[in-house]
Image 1 (cartoon, rainbow, N blue to C red):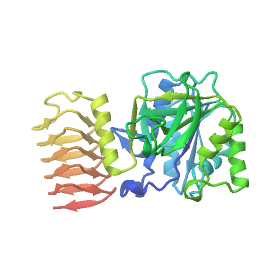
Image 2: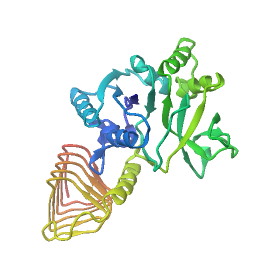
Image 3: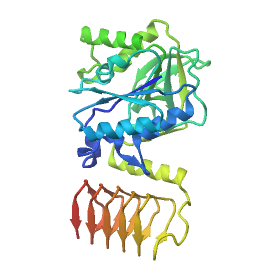
Image 4: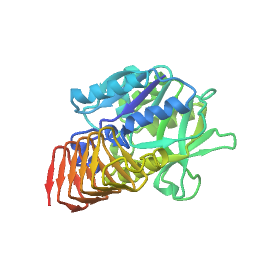
Length: 334
């Protein structure tokens, strides 16, 4: 089975970090968003992923290298396709048209999700991942009957017809069939919201053909699309995965307030870390306080007090107190 992962977007709401790193490659507690997504599939779906097709924008060879290494760690080969301009979700998927054969999963790498139950795709032409939400008027939702078969989709309903929001993860038994419907949209210039080619229009066409659509509900749906959301999701993952994993006395003259994540090779002295702090591999934290913040790999924080902050890789913060969102290789001196 193939994963199709469109990730050509500029990620403007995550700037300055997305200036140098594609959003899905940003880390959450030491692991990139996209690798966490692949791990979730490997753990929860009754299929094995043997190929990951990445739809990229204008990214360098280092991005391809990182993605290929990640795919190999997860037992899959990587293939790469280019989307030169943003023309909608269906257009992004069609950029990988050569990969649209056999069983596929399309996943938009904006969010993390998790489920404690195995997802069984047998007997379905398509499976749509859904999350129960309190306010469905903000989302596209799916309507289904008691046996779990989806009967329709509604974009941002004004009246309560379903609390099941579509999270942007889709299984298709026949990738070529999906490709055919997307090509119909492109050839006949059938556009949706924003004048773009939308995946939901292709899905609607398949549903009208009588294809069997089933629902898979998730327990967690965590946004990573903005800096505040990235911080909040990182805090959630740290609490879930790391808890009290840093033994007392691990770092000289330092107090740890769990939960925290501290990467390999980090040097911390005379500091107060946490709660909800993510310290990347190879960081140096000296005589500082860091809470509710993300410090990426190989950065230095000295004589500073940071909260609700994000510090890029190889950055240097000295004598600063407050909130900062600092890009890679940058310097701030208070």
